[in-house]
Figure 1 (cartoon, protein in one colour):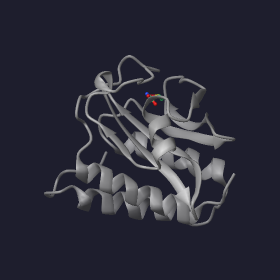
Figure 2 (tube, rainbow, N blue to C red):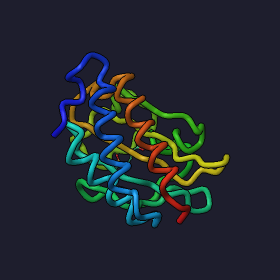
Figure 3 (cartoon, protein in one colour):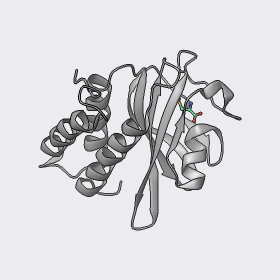
Figure 4 (tube, protein in one colour):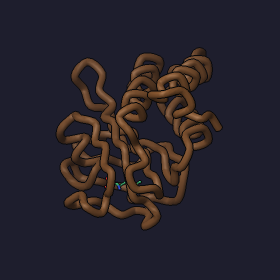
Length: 161
Ligand code: SME
């Protein structure tokens, strides 16, 4: 596992992870294959996660996609919970304490903080990437920038499902 915060703001660690993701996705454009690989890379390399995966935009409902972690809620309406808020606002949601977030959907009671990044290409929402942690306040601004950089690589190297 990489120490993402080893050098100051953590971006050095994420630079290595970005290079790993580029290499992993270099020869493949299939959405399911790349999303599965990306969630496995995140789950194995980012410390203190209990869930990492995708919810896909299926006609304005988020439907569970490739992920790593315990079984999860299958359908999330836009606007509901942290994932639904990211989908409705098209803004990353970085939540220090999910129990203080109105409408949070507790798929796994072990989750205490959450980072959700919308997947947007040419103005179209493909879905969201959701990371959950058992630690309160797990995700810093540097983590957000690092994960957003990884999502940008994934979106560049992957075709719409
Ligand atoms: N907690 C999320 C639901 C998805 S699970 O954490 C995998 C939410 O409130 O959107």
